[in-house]
Image (tube, rainbow, N blue to C red; front, side):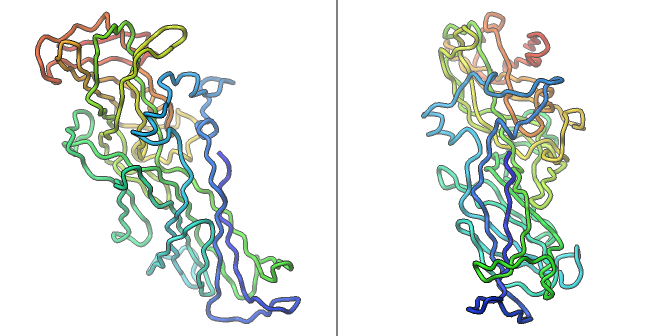
Length: 380
């Protein structure tokens, strides 16, 4: 992932003289400049799956992402935001002091200019949300504490079946969210840390802040071998359980409460997997990640301490009109891909009995990870 820098420019006095006058006003204007954001999943998902072997998500993603997927679900990866929320906290002469007030601004494009008192400042930036249908799921709590902003979503109408102990329904998935936070930024009257830009006749203070994703993309696919039309459709929704309910926008720390997150899926027929024609139930999920973790600060999967298993469930309809809920244990894959990636399960329909009575709860198939050698466990 490229370094996403926020450039902080302090404009002290625009004058025609060769050097800008150093008037010590109580406040001065500061310009915040943001470059274009470019995030590549291949770079961001920089896992080492084995010694010397890097993770190649495209090599294992067979579902693809066509125009219909984009129309229904949006783009596959992260997209560049154009509008940002900016929060400025003045702490006077005391760096890292608790926040007592906040200045809230919206930045359209790459520049923002505001007035800053001499002293120390904390700055928080996150992208504003844009959706296909204009409906936003993300909610920001800025009232509980001025020292941190917490992002969350609400429960949907879809029941939650697995490993969400405090909640009876699955939650809406969050939209993509990036954030950057820096503290104790010294805007000082002595111009310490400033550099004079002769061409622009300004004094400049540069501050690098890294914009990180704090919502994580999972690409899920259920590969149906030997289907031959037996699975005819899906109900269009899936759940992934054991994920965090909230995230701290300042730190990127995921919350402690585990929930199920609901997301859309679609059945595609006649996909190609290593020369075999298969049907695939695929989808794209955005999530706050594994509970109580900062995914961007983790460098290896063995650093993940995850108390919750992760189950993916989807209801499929057979060609006789009966439906069944399939539940897949994907715990190992989620923990290995702690900041997103491809989640794959493979199901041989020759081993699945066709139900003879309706009701998704009448038949649950619990299938272990495909890495376990394709072992299947069925509960009737």
